[in-house]
Image: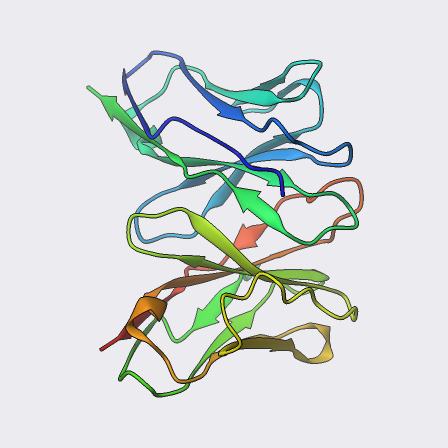
Length: 111
Length: 116
């Protein structure tokens, strides 16, 4: 199993950039890295997915170094509504069925 | 369009009773996942269905847990002889499948199970 490790919590302020790093030292060749956002009493919501280098969409960027043993989710110019728990998910590969979520990072955005 | 739906939204049961949790995935999604989330904790993977293939059940926490998916659509997670430690939110997700990566999973709102 690809074990993942994330910081437990992070505080930020409105308008700042938030970077959350996930460690996944034993990531497999076929694994993708996916990040989800979860608000209280809701199911997680997909943010972004990547395999290597950099991926950017309208809400976030994902940076993955060449060794792929970590990844960093970058949230530009956060607002109060970005306060949530962010999960890093590493798939075990196309032939495997066990998916490993990190423990989640609780991000608190302050005014 | 309709998202993933789960029922019931809340279930309170007594220790030792059996419960069934239902998940209706998004139409056309071939992959379906069940997760468990205990209070204040992260998501624990339970089981995964891909099309008509037999699921990998090794993530289920004990033999009291079982799941099935009928006709490649609706799924039921059954917990027999419930214990207090089974209390959690049970989340279901579906996706188009795993070609080229796990892709975007769409999660339902969850079923909050409380075992007294």
